[in-house]
Image 1 (spheres, one colour):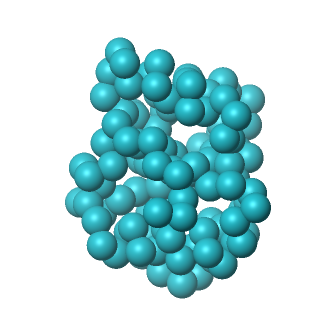
Image 2 (cartoon, rainbow, N blue to C red):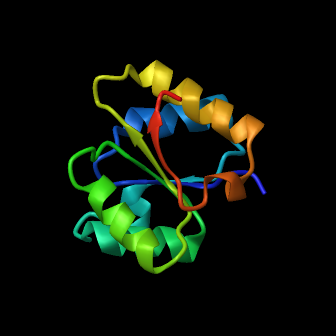
Length: 116
């Protein structure tokens, strides 16, 4: 199965829009559409797990710790962390490459910093 993504509430929407514009068939749910604006990191991770979506986030400060705690108790779909210093175009290219060249299951329980 192709990777499916969930944008964290803090993710630059230009990344989501750019990915969708370049490849309209990518399943990339926005944080707003998922209603996660007021959720805690563990709640967002639980939602990503239920929805079988890889979380894409800029939260380099708290998300790594919460993800490690989350996957210590259950399986998770994976998290991609993107520094806000990474140009939007580079983030878009990374996500498109991942979507094109990998399977959803390859990222399970993985915390991955982009660029690869």
